Amino acid sequence: MRAASLTAVALVLSMAMMAQDKYMGPRPQKVDVPYLLHADTLIEIEAGTAAQETRKDSTIAVISGASSPVKTPLSEPAFIIRTDRQQADKFELYKLDSKNGKREVVIGQKKGKGMGRPVYLQITRLDDKLFRIEVDEPLENGEYSLTPQGSDNTYSFAIY
Image (cartoon, rainbow, N blue to C red; front, side):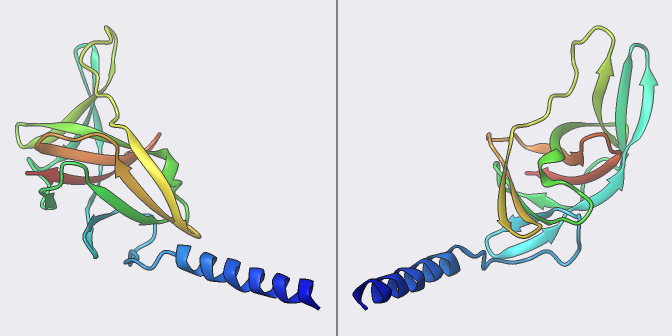
């Protein structure tokens, strides 16, 4: 009888610990769209599509508009995404240059110099199909875009 009651107590404790680990924060309204996390508030970031332009020996990804309407003061922003078709671990973050009323980044170059490099990200699973994407290094003020690898979809924001 004593072993059975110890097993029951252990089962109740393990269930209580699992319940504590469950994510209780805000959840995105839309699927496959990253949301900027500000305390307990989610802000939908600017969704768009990058166009590719070829200049001299470079391929440039270009997003219309000189700056994103979505801004944050956080130098290491975090995002929450609820996935369906997107894979959270396939997102990359790039710093964009604002030129001539557009935002752009070099994505291909024959000589290899001046290419945009992705910023390091940390991905954490919060719940079934719910992930936290965190920037793993301090960012300087400017324009940025999250993009799934191999896609022209962009999710842009600015740090001020």
